[in-house]
Image 1 (cartoon, helix red, strand yellow):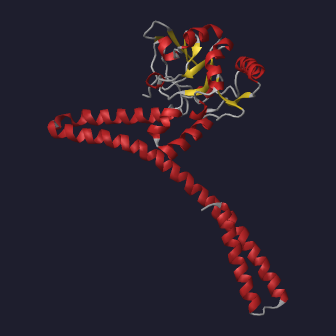
Image 2 (cartoon, one colour; image 1 turned 135 degrees about the horizontal axis):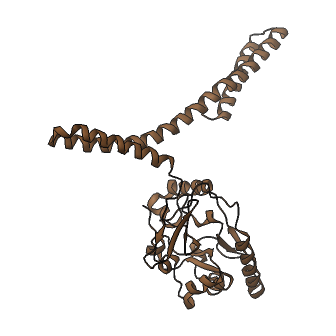
Length: 311
């Protein structure tokens, strides 16, 4: 029950109470006294009941987390029962293993928002480095379904280099086509992405949402290096933008300003996301030229020899 509903219920009760007294012909002085009592009643209800309801909601959230951990622990316990039946002498050893797994689950829950260390090399020999939880391949920040950003990573907006290059690209389009182009959706924090992703999951289911929306920590928008483009008079951030004049212009010219078409058509199995003709990522002119590949876009996953799959 929300605060507004409690407030209105308490007010209605107070009004009904005063109305009954009025119809009974209560004297003026007593009516004033009872009105004061009614006001105090409303205040007390809203001061006492609302915090209790708020605590109840928090407890419900805590129960949901506990349920997730309990489910995992129960799976381990089931395995233990089967092993004990086959060889009772190993009961002590199995119990120790169960405790170790429980500890691991707790650690994972605490550190779930932090990116793991992927230091090494890719399948094509490019160097992978993890700095402050952020993964770089050959010096380029990577954020996809495999490589995540920590919750703490928050540049607050698009980087200054990205903004400058985007302005140059937008101005060139406007000068050539006479139509306004702008970045509709740029930087998103971890928490903002979490809210967006969960809304899509609730609406379409997780499998469908994973095709077009990143899980929190896996979105390029959190990097401050990517944005979604909109153009006056055209569908904005939707499949209706595909195959339009602006989409074609961007596909043919974005690399000149250091941007890449991050999710090209026909590359969903590689990038993990369906084609988005409006999503562009800044990588600098040198790499953008290579990935442009004379109009046959290569993805970052293909170029560096990495994958994009949730673990």
